[in-house]
Image 1 (cartoon, rainbow, N blue to C red):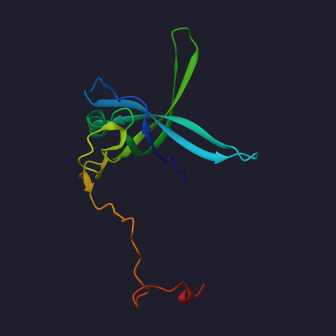
Image 2: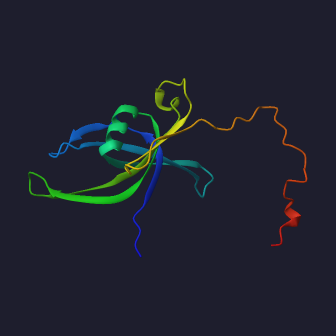
Image 3: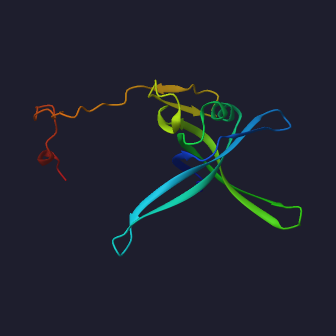
Length: 161
């Protein structure tokens, strides 16, 4: 069994570039930056940035061109593909990309977009699915105190392993 699946959550580094295939199907390409924070052996905090090339086709291309801008937070689920070609000098070049299958937009406030709605939206290339809006992000007040131990709650001591 083989599996080629990529999940990338990060910020868009440039506005999506829109093109069309000879068939008329819309294609967008953009890149996403992901950050990794860690502490090295000497105790210094470090940060690594990785850039990922993303390609969207069809409905996802249309949505990404309308709603994504530089700085937007987005979650992409897709597959990894490496293309190769020969440039004008005859040198073989390679480009590794993530071909998007699904896309989930981050909060509208992220990336400088209109912050009047903080819901997330999910989109897929699957034509049978419809976009879903999730407005039930939990809000925890500053002075929140968790409920006391009710009989409905599970006690860790009751777990048999």
